[in-house]
Length: 321
View 1 (cartoon, rainbow, N blue to C red):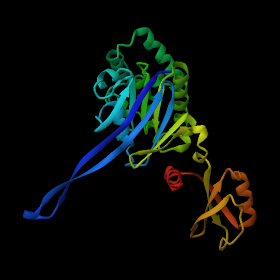
View 2 (cartoon, rainbow, N blue to C red):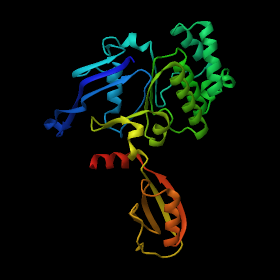
View 3 (spheres, helix red, strand yellow):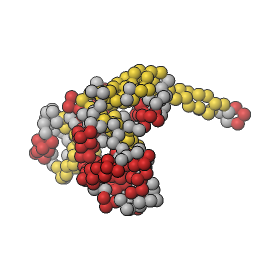
View 4 (cartoon, helix red, strand yellow):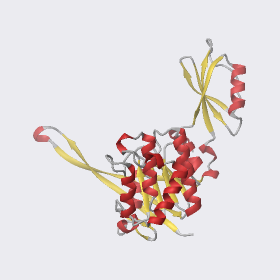
């Protein structure tokens, strides 16, 4: 199996100017911050890898260093066996990328013009172009959007078109940074199925960055978590039990209740609310259904809602270990 991405002891430091004083006493000082610190890993061809991190964790710097947009201060970054920075233009031929809401589409023209433009840029043959369009229609239903001006599309329609454009040239590597924010569940499902299809059919390597832990579990085989510039976890999703171990129940009481009750060890009160409780469920000890039954039996419950574990909670629990 070929290695697509290689990072060896990569460190990237930013130098930032800090102003102090006023008037004639004004002066400037500089401070340095290590955005990523001594990072090493490899990504093999065909892997579907989730990159997770809170804002400011170093995720964007990591991705830019992988792509060769940034040159590391120390260490080595390679893609397709070549130096990422030195060969970044050559490597770009084999990469499809989308960064959040930054568009690759021609805004004022019908979507078909964006497809035709990328067909020419990447020298896609007519035969291959038709094959890809059929595939895109099957999974993303883009046919009805071909003659629609991009500026008139909804967010979901635009994102389907973005995926069409960045995969048109059959890239070996897809990098997707927060691409599904704000999308409805149907379009998310379409995109997930398409990603799984191109991974299985063409062995496309996929790097998927998201704050949605459940989404990462559905799509990725492997998860890397970055925090304060360091990778604190790199493992197969199936080995990370804590990723979906906890969920939370928000309980609203029908009448005054002090919460003083003996609960299953898998249930922990984490917050006292004005008219209820927030309870953490350890799903290794009991199911959400069992938890709900016990809480209704022991408390004057008016309403219960379930929240999945947030990325912040997961990383906090991980760091505390």
